[in-house]
Length: 185
Figure 1: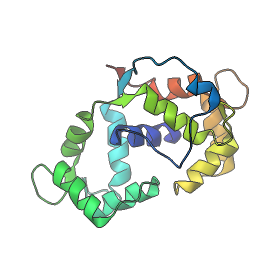
Figure 2: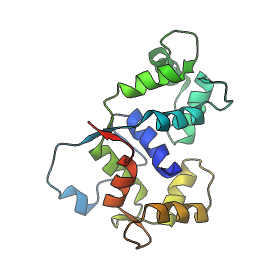
Figure 3: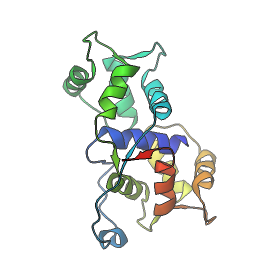
Figure 4: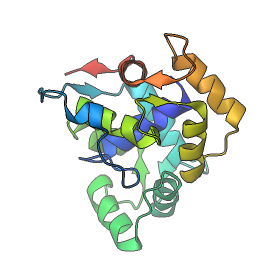
């Protein structure tokens, strides 16, 4: 899975309602009939990669400061109070750190990622609302999240997901990318 998908999977699993910016539904998706959302769970290997992104110094545990920095890099800046609250939930053994087992426990109990949240993430990346994510749109969003990647990197990511070869990522391709290594619940 690409870094693009992995970062999104973590963002989605972390929040009951994914928000990136202040985008509204595009016309074509708001007219779809409401269906019960499917729910997906990330696998342990992917969660390890996410954990490692949070564990900036690689010591096998996340500090409150590392957590706060990682959330800020994802565009979800949190206050000291919010970080303290999050840690009171995640730090089961109350040692002041979150280890991988605690990280999995918290993120495994969140009910997984809903298909409607993945659709919301798609709309956040589809800056012009045309139903497709171009490499340029991906690059703009990645820059706004503090990710250091080039336009060429984003073109490679899009090519890796673009099943129909049109040079962009549509909703079906995005959904496949986001869920191909997950278990449907």
